[in-house]
Length: 249
Image 1 (cartoon, rainbow, N blue to C red):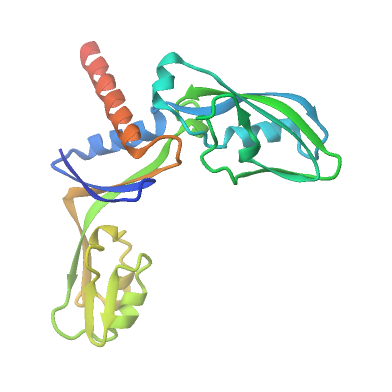
Image 2 (image 1 turned 180 degrees about the horizontal axis):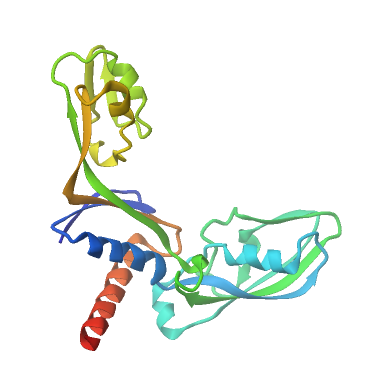
């Protein structure tokens, strides 16, 4: 399998894979979602809660707050304790979670936890542990999906209603000016093969197909881990699982 980076902004990445077996690509996707260690709040001890929100709902919300994860800590199975003690009136955000380890912080500090009214108080301790997406989705580090590489054939010469056809593209990769229709430079991999343009204009004007020897692999991190750490950990885990299966066979 060959892999090349199409684009990345630090939180999302688009990879072009070729020379692959589709089953292997899907195995990588599932491993990323289900088998990468991340940190998440798993146990909450509520000392006081006079708010309108039940303890169980409050604990569930805390569990879904992405926590910045240092992958090296997963080897030591370290537990991390967060404390939250606030009295209203106040809008409580994830940034109000206090941890002795200053590196352990919520990925999105502005995440709303609860809006406390006058006199309402919450006082709790939340324990974060390492886990995998197969145990609970709160441990999953990213959203991963793929599709075949797009092939777009556009009629040579004049295209009637080129601007209208281009405007129908939901991912805005087409440009139409006058009677000229074209794919925007560098935007072809973003085509999602929806065929909205083809359905409107007809195959004689624009035809959308797929190159089944290539795959566009999309990865969107929730922020707990760097993209590189997610991919490396997934590949390492997948390799171990394949070896274990091979040995048993």
